[in-house]
Structure formats: structure tokens, C-alpha cells
Length: 399
Image: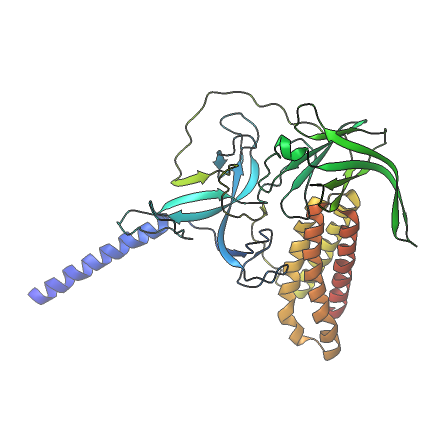
């Protein structure tokens, strides 16, 4: 009897321990899944290990989370959209990386746990380069081909163009560095397809404003939608980069913030690491702002959505909204990858046509993402040519 009683007690203790463990697991916050990014090209983001398509280095793991940040007080980062508790500006979407560490230890971890002294690891949210591509002055925002500078073009009146220059964290370039930027705005030009040379018919130099906050130029009056091109050197010895803008309307500066009493941030258990000029945080990727989307179950639905995404890309290019082309392009990339296992069910002839077509869709999506970020219309249209040809060939092969 004593042995039976002992066994029952042990069983009850085990059941209680398992229940407590299950309760802790149920109440523990769900972590974002691991992603894989390139240390040198943080805008590259995949859901599995692999090789960077740009520099061929191995991708590294990172745990990303979407957050909402104050455009003025960058230490204010919330889990939901809303207004800044300090200045009442609308929060903007950003991507942060989640890491955990122990006091007195430089090692970082991608999951919570216990330190050697038994205390829980400390969580941190760190802003990353290219994680904040939000315009601050109502204009159009692009990343420079050097993968460091970012620019925003604004068209506040019919006779004025302003160029704001930022670093890789979206911070305004210091006045001393802004003076090294050489730029002009071109409102009229002609292109000779025979010689492939562009002649500028109307161009205006961009000069540092009186408050040293941006570059500006008085331009000729143009009708809406207004197309213009900024040609920029970020140093006397650097290459010249082209940024194409299309303004459907005059840009508007966001409303000035309202000063409110300072409030203590609610405790989240995760510290916020804000980038500073002297201590940059770890690397960051571009914020997608999108959750995972399920792939349609039928072949017909996949092909229909693939064609729809191609149409979305075409319409965005026609409107000059280059910064948004990556969204439907990357969805098309995912759809093309989902079609790869079905190649085995095609005839030999269609399989030989379908396989390179899917590769062209994927490559075209990457090219569209890179070209859209830098805002060069010629590069965007060239990437679209590769992309749309791949989509058409893939649909023909699988139908």
C-alpha cells in the first residue's frame, strides 16, 4: 500500500509540474520567427539559410519584429500604431531586431533565457540600417546606390524643389557633410536612342538652404503631374546618381508636433536601443510592414495572382511610385518559388521553358527592389522588362 501511495504522490507532483510548465508556455510571449539577412546588404531578407544574391556571402540569422516609432523621438517605439506620447506625431512603421544579453557580457542571443547567475536575459529592440524609409517632409524617399545615403525630394510649391539627405538610419546629414553634396535638379531633358545620350534642357543647381537643413533650388514652373530628376554626388570624388521623381500634387509638410508633458514609457521587458551619432546599433533590414501571406492552393489561383502582381508593378511604375514596387514584386517572387515543385508534372518541353522563366521572375523581383529603392526610372523599367518577360513565360509554361 505504501508503494502505491508513493507512486500516486509522484504522479501528482509530476502532473502539477507539467501543468505549471504548460501554463508558463501558454503565457510566454510568442517570438517572431527567425529570418536570414546579409550583413552587408540588410535589405536582403529570406526565411531560410542561403547565400546573398548580391555579394554571395552566407546569410546570418536575425529575429525581426515590426514596431511603430516616433519620427522625432526615436526612443519611443510601440507595438501598435498610434501617436507619440511625447509630441503627438503619428508613429511610423519600422523594423527592429530582437536580441537578448546578460549584464557584463557582450554576447547576444536570439532568444530569451537565463544568464549564468540565474537571472533572466535582458531583451533589446535595436533599430537597423534601412529600417526606416519614411519621408519626413511629405516627399518621396529613396536609398542611394551606395547603400548608405538616403534622400527625400519635396515639391512644396510650383517654383521650389528641396532635397533632404539622410544617413543609413534615416538621420539628417550634418551641415558640414551636406556642404560636400553636389546636386542639381533637371526638369526637362531629351534622350537620343541612337547615341543613348541624354541632353539636359532645363537644369538648376541645388544649394544648401539658409538653415543648412536641406538643398534647394528655384525651378521653372511645371504642370502636374510634375516629372523631374535629381542628379547627386555625395562627395566631390563620388559617382553621380540619378533619382527620378513624379509628383502628382504639391507636397505638404507634416503638421508641427504639439508639446505635451513627458510621460513614462510602459514597461515591456524589452529595452529600446536608439542609434546615436557616436554609437551606431547593429545592422537592420528593410521593414516590410507585411505579415506572411498564404500561397493559394490551386495552380490556377497561383497563376492568376502572379499575373495580378505583375499588373500592380506595372501600374506603380506608371505612377512613378518606385518605392512601392518591391511589395507586389516580392509577392510574385514567393509565388514563383511555390511553382518550382510543380515543374516535375510538366512535359519536358514546358519544363525546359518553365524553369528559367521562374528564375527570371525571382531575379526580376530582386532587380525591381534594388532599382525601386534608388529611384532611377531607367533601371526600374529595365528590371520590369526582365520581370514581366519571366511572368509571361511562366504562365505560358504552366497553363
